[in-house]
Image (cartoon, rainbow, N blue to C red):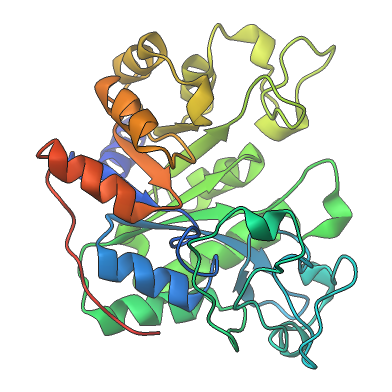
Length: 325
């Protein structure tokens, strides 16, 4: 009992301070190529509380910062400058040297995805970065307070496409500790198995449970005859709400899709001792509505827009530390 209380105290102490958590999604996806050093430099220069990013493990054991389990044709060009004509290689099946040859410095203008971010400024010649390079960029900026919200990119219905939950989580914890960022990091995931493993191996690192309800890609998946494979053995039908489900999973932060957020659910989450940080919020009017619901932070592709909303509402602003990648 004493040990459990001590671990709980460590976890609470590791959570971000009470200030509103302005998170730059994939760095600043709306303004610079996602999950790249230019995107993280853009976010740091604007001033964010947290850099949100994604990691996958390569075949030879390196933590690569990339949102998808494979190299995406809407984001990547071959070494000869040609856009990928179809899905690229799976990161888990490919060595780092091969993956670093892709240029992810601009969006494919012919792809539907590429047309979704007209303000994004290309940076040609940008490779997929390593997590350790993101840590090094933050050290270079001199920012002593910005945090990292790191998502493990797994799909329990497609286990062959990525490292196992144990492999990825262990590698991530090792990298966070080796980089001296354990006190400034949080691990998030839709696949709660990784969060369960992280709680056991690194209780000092906070965890954010991502949820999505009511869509085709729903990870909560209510009403099915068995438990969702995403929830590490919990059955959503046994709990009245997402916050109750996250609390049962020993969560600390509930990170829902913003359309699933209501004032009552935010209040419930707070009663349960959870912080609430919705994703991905790009409309200033929606930012205002969610702040009125008393969420604890927001994840946005446009940290500049969120910062403007915060400034207008006289919320404390995180430090801006201009840096180049």
